[in-house]
Image 1 (cartoon, protein in one colour):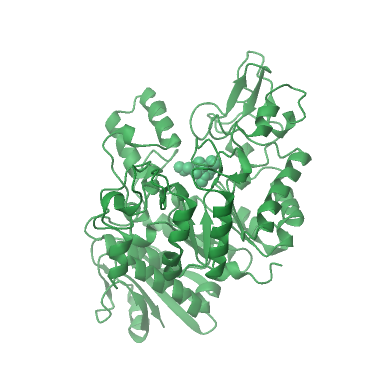
Image 2 (cartoon, rainbow, N blue to C red):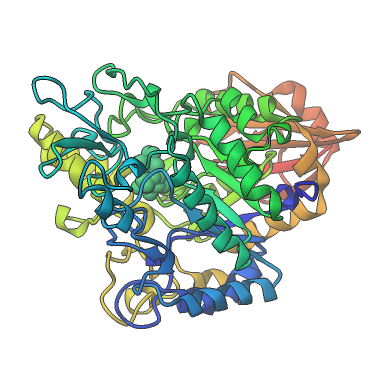
Amino acid sequence: NQTHEWWKKSVVYQIYPKSFNDTNGDGIGDIPGIIEKLDYLKELGIDVIWLSPVYDSPQEDNGYDIRNYRQVDDLFGSMEDLEQLLDEVHQRGMKLVMDLVVNHTSDEHPWFVESSKSTDNPYRDYYIWKDGKENGDPPTNWNSVFGGPAWQYDEQTGQYYLHIFAKKQPDLNWENPQLRKEVYDMMKFWLDKGMDGFRMDVINFISKDPSYPEGLDGDGSPYFMNGPRIHEFLQEMNNEVLSHYDVMTVGEMPGASPEDARQYTDPENEELNMIFTFEHMDLDSEGDKWNLKPLNLIELKENFEKWQTKLHGTGWNSLYWNNHDQPRIVSRFGNDESYREKSAKMLAICLHMMQGTPYIYQGEELGMTNARFENLEDYQDIELLNMYEEKKAEGWSHEELMEAIYVKGRDNARTPMQWNSQEHAGFTSGTPWLQVNPAYPEINAEAALQDKNSIFYFYQRLIQLRKEKDIITDGNFELLMREDPVVFAYKRTNGNETLVVLCNFSDQQAGVAEELIQTIQAGSVVVSNDQEQKNRGVLEPYEGVVYSV
Ligand code: TEU
């Protein structure tokens, strides 16, 4: 079944439904809104859509807290709408991948409602319940990702339950074979409808160390990331479900190393097709993500080098700059002021010429930027709001906190999609659930489609190139100009074909290494964000160029 490996040649586009396109005026994007924009996505040239959760949910974490895995949330539409979406996606020759959130559910899921009723309820063991310590403290000192302890005390039954994320997101107990079977049945329910695969939320968190050790400074992650039975569980899932369908899978895996990734994605192991690494997203902070530090480009280059070379020939990479949890890349590693278009295109080249399956997050193809809202009240994200309270209590100033939010807050990615220059960027006729980025009169899809030099058409070209040139999918990777602090340069080689990729991450001119100049003089430009007739020994600010040599 995995012999086609069509996902190796695919480009994926992520839709965050709440912020994509609203058709009923409630200020929240919906499934009919996605259907309306399928021709836009087809024009971009993508192959696969990954849809963030649209399941029934109290929306504590925008749908990553599921109440009913087999129902569509009214906010987004109906099951008929979703089936129509699937149908229309397929009619256009694209595929649709669902989000699978099975490390935890909502506390409003009937399993958890039952589980909380008594210690001998048949569903008790679907979740992770433990007695407190002798002094009444939680079972371990683990902190939750969204702040506060990872254990919540339940008065009624006198035990604690584990929640690695919000209190309203209790962790499922994967040690329980009955629970696992329920998950597999639910996956089949969606695949039998014709869905083309899953993006699996924090899937490397599902196996916990059964001895529940204390964490260093409250960090329990060594005991729940890549845990003792993770490979067994994924192999079972593959064997029970995935291997019976022609689908793609990508596991979201914070804390997975390239060595872990090889195991997860080596086809011989029959687990997943690829994973999302977090390593390149963690380089501009230290400790937690809110402790900002400037990006050291050499670290970024060496990180990509590591992933590109270690997975080559064994596993498979996913390639991404953006998703619904990350700030906008043009504001992060590019320059969203004087060089917005230029640097957005450079970043696109840098990523899309590597080996792996590229993911484009909605609005990335327009060069959408981070938002800076004036008041904390303008923000919605649970992670950011909890962080504010927690760090305020630790003594951070309001100004420092707002700055951290401007740089790293997840709502940067979640402002509504900018379709045109009309009110609310054409996203809704009502009041958007999260404000539109005020940049929309300039940055929007309508304007991009009218400008043949737009970022949109640049992405379209890069996607086409991947279809035309097998070297992009198959070639090996070699880092060039390793010590250069501003130029990210690499070579792809496949048989006697070679591509040289040069990206200037600075707003100054930068020199190309002597030993490369001759080679590229003799080569031809495959794609570039600068004029083609120029001095090839010098890179202009934020220039990105690919030579075939
Ligand atoms: O994210 C997993 C995760 O580890 C995030 O907490 C991430 O580290 C953080 O958002 C970075 O700021 C997944 C989903 O992508 C995220 O939206 C959910 O909130 C989370 O799982 C819980 O389901």
